[in-house]
Length: 294
Image (cartoon, rainbow, N blue to C red; front, side):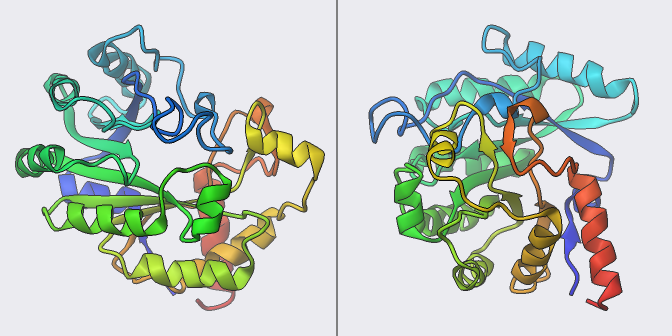
């Protein structure tokens, strides 16, 4: 069993070393603003992945320039992708979205975009623009799928179904746009067999990249309150490695694996507390695969 790694794949696509820089465009989500619901996803606290320079009072240009300064000290020749990460980055009027995306692309050494969004927030007129944008720059549209189980999606207050995820991914891929997906492993009510079924469903979708990450219980979230009231067993790092190995064994080789774990500020994480960075986990995963000849 092998998989394609994101870093080497990205370098082969763009011909240079590339780093993503997160930006905060000041978006919200339809399950936060009352359109579909309030409170957002039960697991979500955007403070866990917003760097210090990601502040909505700063322009997209300023955020990117500060991000570049952070990385350029170590890699002077680095190029960058502007990663619209926080909340739902297609949830606004088309004119505003175009203005934000085009501003990011005008920043020197920014060679493309990664746009994080939800499957129910991709109107046809935006897809028309993104199809044209994809012809002139590097682009990934990344959908938060989270689970293939509609009961789970309801329970975590996503506000969309897995069918909507499939439809959005297919509509986007049909335009020739690279599509990524994000999936969470470890909801305590999703048994092993259910996750293996999910992997097979995900593997049939026209995805370019996939992110997996462990379910994290983050302070200040609804999930943290549920955990405090009725704690459940969280997997050890070794147990999660085994789960990931089984999961990716059901995925097609051509699917690029961007990451396997999420890194949040330790002071915000209630559980699990593994202390592993993504590259450290990937090394453990590779070692396990070598040990067992996979």
